[in-house]
Length: 88
Image (cartoon, rainbow, N blue to C red; front, side):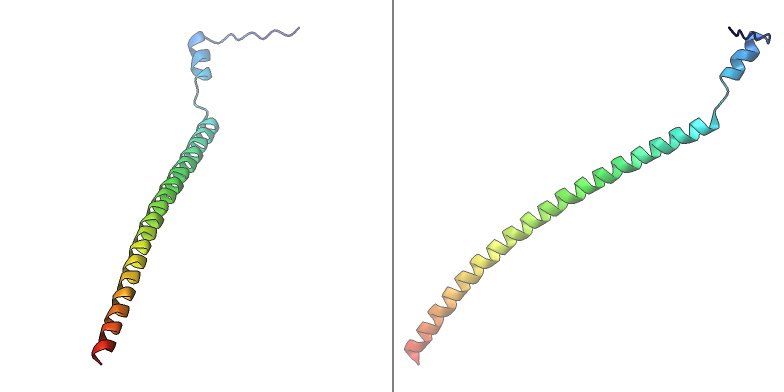
């Protein structure tokens, strides 16, 4: 059995244990930035998807209105051409 004995003062041992690990800090920051970037990309994609859905719905409504107006104008044009034939 191996026993290790540290004869340094307790304050020095505690200070050395609490030393800043730069590699661990960088890896943690890298991981957090990666997660934040991924989450923000997902949010941006979802926002873009919903805005495109709203835009498509708006354009489909506009298209149906235009088709209805086109049908009314075609009927009016036919009526006017028939009325013109009566006078000519």
